Length: 364
Ligand SMILES: *Cc1c(COP(=O)(O)O)cnc(C)c1O
Image 1 (cartoon, protein in one colour):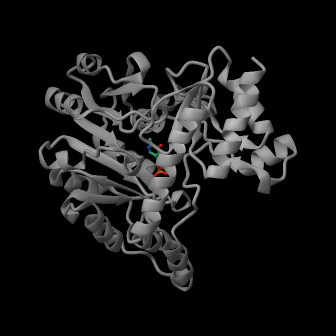
Image 2: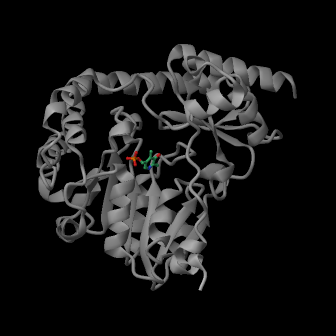
């Protein structure tokens, strides 16, 4: 038996996760000063963390010899206040929403269960589900990446366990509309996971539907609008019956002491949140209007640029050499080879992004 055969066969077919590029890597590869690099490849908050979160992290440093509370109850309370849901509907999770997905897949998926994935979308759903033996069923998003709701419903089978919808969708920036979501919820015997990682930047959120549908799970994160990507904090809003089961298998102490206090502090800082939302909304309008390629309308803190007939790999490379990190979307299943996702930056950063795309387009 080869050593590779010791690994579960489910894992063999999973493609390696391609993360956004880091400042250190780009500085080394292109001989750039790290301080000059603009990082717009991972949809982080370009305004930085809330100052309240920074203070809370510093203040807890002397107490990290102690375990955090097993269920992060202080953080769950703060999420309850922020969302308006009782704690019976809330699971706080680490590391990030990815940790929530891992726990949910461990809870729900038996080998052979099917998951439905409209693509292109965030790739970690598939990784977490397949590691537990799920069979992915991909449904192409329709024209201009508008969700083809009939195709999703038609993909349903007796083995369907979870349907993943990302709203606003990463990398397209589009939201699911409410009628479509209701139809999907009403036509599946499985659960629907709606990923609202970017919901603070958008016009609609669907959390209130958890009170109406007992097969809906909402996934959220503090990595984007709340500026805490480095703390790895996520949470879920789900029906009480499901939360009860979830809590049986959730890793105890899965949120660190600094993460708990940072999360509580960030959730209380509505000033920082509003500023972050405004920055993303104004900036995405500016990028839409000024990037000289097709830019999709976005409800998130990023925009999707179609550089066709150019190749997204070549264009990303040109931007990287100028010290602008963007996300080449070729690693997203179903995205083709001309899409680039750009996080909305500060005004100064957005101007540099536009200039760089103008130079690229002038050379076509
Ligand atoms: C960033 C992101 C997440 C993951 O967030 P973490 O909480 O940092 O793990 C989940 N879903 C989507 C669509 C994202 O873009």
